[in-house]
Amino acid sequence: MTTTASGSTDTGTAETGARRGFEEIDILWISEGMSCDGDTVSMTASGQPAIEDIVQGLIPGLPKVNLHNKVLSPTLGGESFLAPFRAAARGDLGPFILVIEGSVPNQNIIDGEGYWTSFGNDPETGEPLTLNWWIDRLAPRAWAVVAAGTCATFGGIHAMAGNPTGCMGLADYLGWDFRSQGALPIVNVPGCPIQPENFMETLTWLLYHAAGSAPPPPLDRNLRPQWLFGKTVHEGCDRAAYYEQADFAKDYNSPKCQVRVGCWGPVVNCNVPKRGWMSGVGGCPNVGGICIGCTMPGFPDAFMPFMDEPSGGSLSATLIKPYGAVMRRLRGITNYALNREPKWHHNGPELTSGYNPRWRP
Ligand code: SF4
Ligand code: SF4
Image (cartoon, rainbow, N blue to C red; front, top):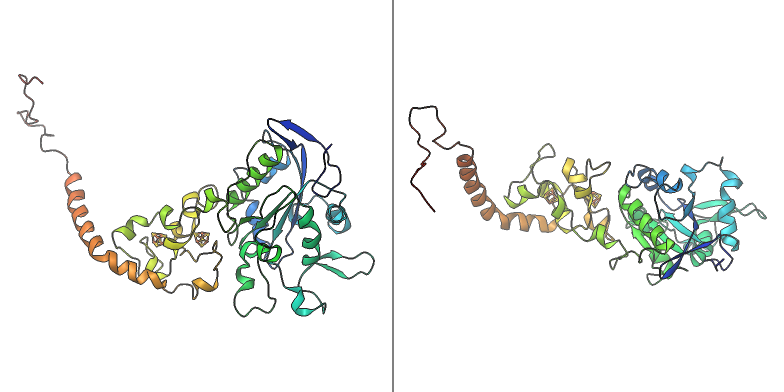
């Protein structure tokens, strides 16, 4: 037995090397933030690993996982679905990982007059319980806190200029220096929606950490997993060779680099073109979609209007033009030469390969 995130006793621990880990853990997933539930839907597409593999205990070394997500719940909803959330809020369930999907509205600006978004009702008053109410009670008790998707990480579409809800990302709400009961910062997995394996890989890392067999996941200064968001879209894009040769698409029907028709890939941290979207297929610019920077804290405002040429794109595309034009010409010449067979490949009466029987090294 060990003390849990909530201060109660948990379901058991395992001795795993230098550190004691959990044998069983709950995942409390609330998607009642300002969102479209797209991150839950996207997560179900992950194959490596699949959420089913984790829930069924098919991955060696992980704790037993009890997932509570409304889309994937075996309950019929209502109170039976809410029961573990209510237990965790009372401090009767732990350890657990809290996953928040969707941005967090500012309740203070309406000063108790109604609510922006809610999750279940107060059994005594029948009044809706706001997302903020749940976060205030669950986040301090959680072993780890994960923000799934750009709305939960940085606010996303709902938090753009002119929004009426004053909504924000989870770290803006809890504080960027927040630490969970497991001494972890919030783990931000942005994406609109999350790339399926990006989320599941991060969750799996956290679960191995919960089992005591992995260090905490390394995060960048925006609390994104470093190994997923350390490179730019451009560095992994199928079309990067077109960019280098200054061969730019003029419309969206072209296989060439899309920087002049609105792609922000050179300055956006995201691995989607490398990883693909589902089973390695797809990945925004690879399949003709400009990168609009959906994994970035400045999204969407800093990238609008979408489909206009990025401010720096015009300069870089102009600067690379002379180099690209020369390189394209030279490579064309070399490519033509390399596409010809040597002249000694013939069926004539003489050997013209240059073979010399008296040659010695
Ligand atoms: S399409 Fe975008 S990410 Fe791909 S090479 Fe062009 S600018 Fe870079
Ligand atoms: S490539 Fe750009 S638009 Fe596509 S998921 Fe990554 S950041 Fe978002």
